[in-house]
Length: 477
Ligand code: ADP
Image (cartoon, rainbow, N blue to C red; front, top):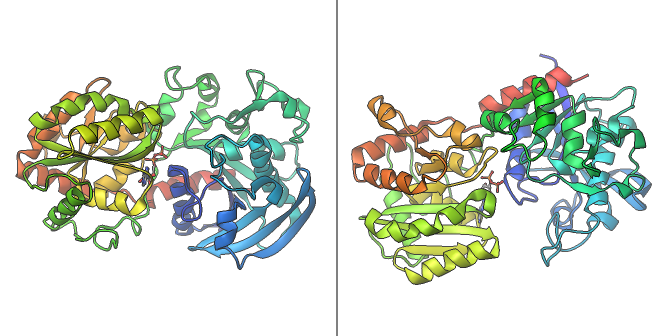
């Protein structure tokens, strides 16, 4: 197979900068694609935290005036990834996160900050930099959505794949910015970058890329319906022949219960007994009553409307009768944070809550809880259920998007066939699902079989990488 070179364009990349699953995907996919004969260079904004880590980066290009001030391209390698960093201090050298300042408010010039990223991706294809002549460009989410727009009209351009990780984040900005962003006015139309009178960065990617992918087959189907399409379902139906759903994997080195240094008691699929120690460590960490007699449920999540955790709060009155405890790790909307804090304060022996973002604790939770609850209203793919499967924590998931595609419900038929890797529930049915889980947990042999099935699920990047490789090859030129 002919080797091809891909330029990935993203605003987040694990392990350098992460706010969610996007970073996990962009950090892991290049390594998986290498096995398919595809080399990847990833273009990433030069946030201060990124530049601080990449101190040996080499300057490869200077743009004297780029979105109003000088910018540079730096090349670096990190964690097996080949990187090009857009060092544009006027756009990125500030405190806070990738999209918002320390006060949580979005940066007012996010349109410029991420248009610049896409513009540079397009410019790179003309710069003839050594080792940087991509056959295809893989742009991720609205932040890279304008890439195909900037490439439009360029006679010799690489093919483009646009991956949407979450249709809810659309990158909408006033049309008055058209000139500032250097976008060709003729693209401001229903077939291009215009979305209800605004410039739609995500819309641009969906309309103009040669192929669109999203992160699960079910989500690919759902977003073509008015219920999930966020006003883009018409466009997505129109482009259905170019739209593919490819499940995410997880990095099975980072998430490996047999060699995980974040957990006190490591374990292999063949022997799950050491999980008990992790459960005890968790109960201690969260200040819960330490016992093997109760099922330990967990939540690891952004606390937002999408994740449906407001639906869990009213079910907590049932923990006693379920003979269960709950540990929550998350951060997000104030009302949800307060709701779970209050629930923990009311029932401290059985509910523990850490408001914050804590990767090592997420590992310990996956290694010690019996089941992970994910009641999302929509979920493009979801990664936490994949980690849970790998760690033998049974996912209890809403039947939507990637959750529906990755968890096999332990219903009667599945149990009769020795199948099942977790539980699925339909809208409004979280409470019965928790009861069903409690009933299964009371039957240790069945539960252990389900755990073994879960651990045997293939959650690696191997199969997804093959599918991405096929699509990247289709567009490469
Ligand atoms: P999303 O990208 O919508 O937030 P995903 O399930 O796709 O949801 O990915 C979330 C990622 O972030 C997972 O790797 C998960 O373990 C991690 N995560 C989410 N919240 C926390 C938290 N509070 N602490 C540690 N890790 C978290």
